[in-house]
Image (cartoon, rainbow, N blue to C red; front, side, top):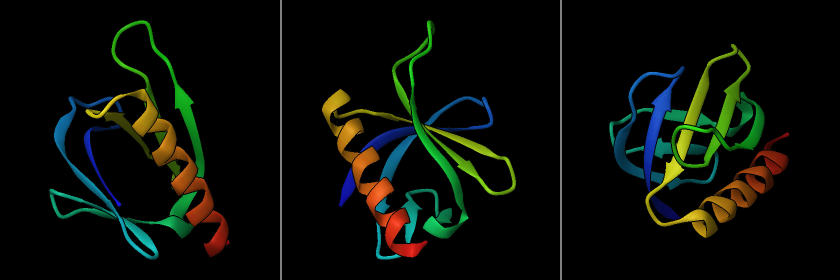
Length: 90
């Protein structure tokens, strides 16, 4: 599955791009990849400033915040897909 997103790492400015869910990892349009097995936590976050975001915390403690350009429904769908994919790799 592919999603149009804005991704920010560790509270840095966000970058618009594409996120692809592959068999065992997330692939971003900038070429970076995150294996599902490297994810410690996945949760939805609402902040006073900015849109709702899906937060991915890696085992090393890094945080990726993913906001959907396709709306809140797509963000929830992405969250469900990631939780399911991570569970298959656990």
